[in-house]
Length: 434
View (spheres, one colour):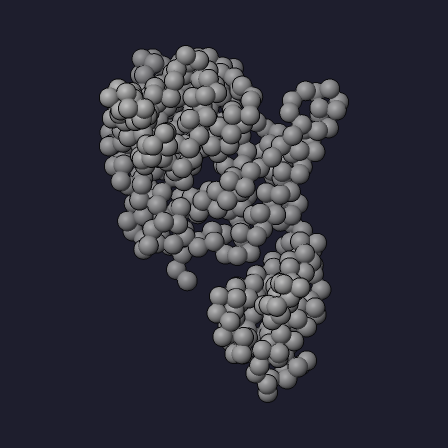
């Protein structure tokens, strides 16, 4: 299978990589943060920058915005006095007299592709709650008004994190996060001073900007919405990525709980939402595409910190590396990836049988890929014989084949148990009502 990028996508990747390098030359020692922001752009997600005053959050956002030609940009500094119409547009007074809430969205966040909200946690909870649907669903839903929003990515900036039930929900909308600390190393201070003098504290103007449609094309491919191009994620890579995510969540929660018990402060709880878990696949596809591939590889799982870890928080990256390396070494040393691949291929066969019950009477091995088919056929010849083709024969074949497997890891043991349950449900559908 050809995994190389088509020429039109390859050219787009080159433009994005050049833009990132340009931004890195202007924003000194901010490579991880710039990668976060471009990752958010490529996956059509939002990014939160947390830093003390004067570190250059606005400058960095404006520099990256300046790399693109065409998007409408909404900028706002949040405050407690603001109401939702600050972001959605003023209310139509004639409609309001009739008791109908209708916003005039022209020039608002709703009609902008990019947004920058400074001091976002200065906004009151009422306004933040109103923004939740717009940030996540890309819609304005207020009163009887329900219209699509053009938002691609919003960059939020904050000097502090205000923790309430509402702000926790807002934080979950900003999947990419970075903490920016002031640079105190003499070399970086010198380089920052150089750039300040060169650009008089403003942005650097690129010789050539990227057409907005170039980014949106890449983003559409990466998010799996392009009918012509598909970035493949092998089943075993997807499964392994979720194992690493779960292990990372467990280790980080344990470390924070221990620190809290020892009086070190901080939040002991750590939670990766199902939303973030699902969007990890987009991040993996983005990594593959930016490395000029149309297929995600096992090595890409190690790049998941672009989404899962807060840039600038060393503890998170170190614990992720520990979680990833321990699982990867274990699976490689035990050849568990081959076993995992075969079981997940079998899962695909079961899915097709559930979609089309008429397949129950066909030779089940014929539905599998070449590798799994050979394994099933060889095993069946030795154990069951191949003269018979019936639903009962297929049930026996699948059940006894799965039971013959000795799982190499605890996760594979659980996967095998789930597959045995599915086989029973497929061939005994009436048991659902018992």
